[in-house]
Image 1 (cartoon, rainbow, N blue to C red):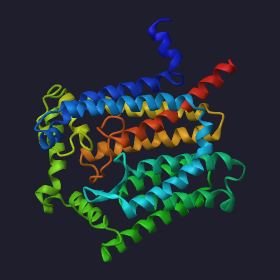
Image 2: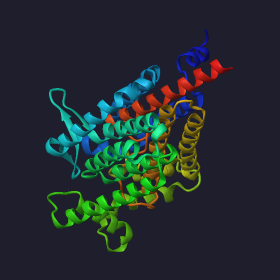
Image 3: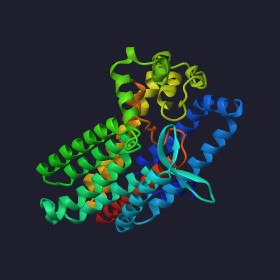
Image 4: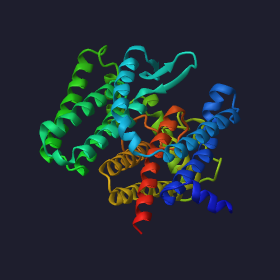
Length: 386
């Protein structure tokens, strides 16, 4: 058995999706190697090899997670969804009480003894998508009913998004939008969805008002206001408040059409989060508008392949979970890119499967493993049908 046949046998499901996952991983290694210079200079005197090795190990482990995740029957994730939702709520509450504050945000929990730090919101996002997909899939017969279908969905959505918003507003808004679109695709009554949107806006407005009057209750409210003011009135903003965006825009301008070449970025030395939040600007600087456009095209292709899965799935849960995961990856990518292009205020969202990361990258890989499990099932069903 040759290598290509062996790979085709082991990696079941949509081959294009597998190729996209591998391609994004390769782009990540090359981009992080170049972008990590500033971080290495700050923490280890400029030695980048340790950071690259750590990223390679995490990324390699993440790809193993994708492979193992795709071997499991995706219906198992439906059975686990309620338990995962309860765990997510507990973890988010614990984060607000015992979480570590990094960069002004209390988003991280540290597991004792092994000293592993992770963002509880990463787990909560995946848990909520699975739960909403399960709820929509299991309630198709009563999906238009307010009490039977809508209420059991709306309560977890509002609860999880509110808990995430206390420390990570951009992730909460993105997750809320994903859930809304899942409900639209899942045929939930539109009048109830509009009600949920109005309720979500009301809750957000209340958070901002409470945060403005009582900063101790919503500490991040001041940060939200500052970022929005900086975005809409850059001339009045302090230089430090615009430093990241200015550096990203300079990098993109330097890149031109074809870029300055691999490893030749100048802004990687000054951008504080070049390896994470602003890695897209480094990619554009080194590979130009051509490279930046190709990366956007890869994410669009990923989502189009997900839509193909949705239309071919015979099970509502499989279709909804694929749509939710695919949409969340696309929205996160586009929000990150929009920030790099100064189209949105800074959000703190990374570029999926490309930015340097720890547990956030692993949770992305878990989501991709579930997606590929759905793909494997659909491929098997279609093969049996023929």
